[in-house]
Length: 109
Image (tube, rainbow, N blue to C red; front, side):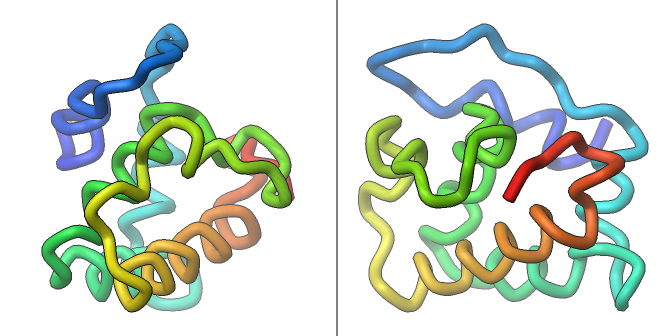
């Protein structure tokens, strides 16, 4: 099991949704380095203390399956404790996930 599979259920949420685990193919795409996946953006985020929890919470809350113009991340508490640099890195990962891994993960823009 990958880091995603282990940590997704840990985000507390005042409006809980049923947790739907990522598929192995989606997980692999999100962690794949280079142009084939989003691993580079994830690694950059992972190096910041509060960025990785934002990304894991957004994935756990399935925010990427909702339109990007929505406020899923904010309303579900994913952004609490993160500074602007960390939120920017999380947004870069999200942009990659919604484009490079969109089809395999069923993410929308």
